[in-house]
Length: 284
Image (cartoon, rainbow, N blue to C red; front, side):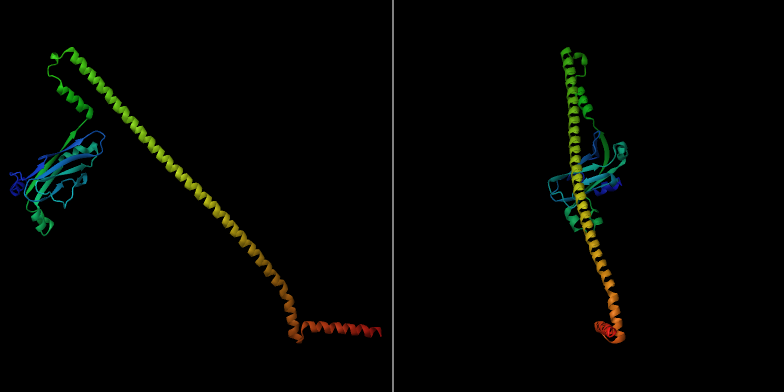
């Protein structure tokens, strides 16, 4: 595959397009740092715009941030940041990953009929390996101080040795101060989080009390409605019983009228007259 890259890479030697870093992507690993980045810079020194794309053998572990439809204009450059997504305990496995950067002329890119033909004729393509640079802030500072010291310690004066030790002590105090400051900041952040949680909890309690009041009001309204229903039901039962008590008298009067053809009040008058006449006849 390398020979194919060299045969298609016609303008590699002219440096018309520069890709930095040229061979290896360096991911800087700092302890307890969640985001690990590497940077690629593509410079276009040609008199025309170019399009590019970046491919990797492990796409699940990298986020490459760039606009795929945005060209690099003539005599300009573009920085691309590559984010490595991996637990630091397994980061050594990423050393086997590879990257491929392909650059084509924008005119050929726009004139192509499909995606395969767009990337068939390369202006430049370059393979990159992956390397990890572990960086410790304290160790890097100490290494820089050691490099600044003369190689022959015997030539140092007693005052210089004392001064270097004083500087080391001051740096230790400075580091301790930074640690204390970080601890204080973390405590402040924790306090702010606790305060926010307390505010949210108070808000939830207030909503709970308001809902409890509404529920009590609903219960009271339901009881009032139930009492009204019971009262109307009681009145209805009384009226129903009264109608049932009045119904037999009407049935009797109706039955007598149906049998005799004479209304009940006329029969009552006739009976009264008969009783009076009978009493008079008995006296005589």
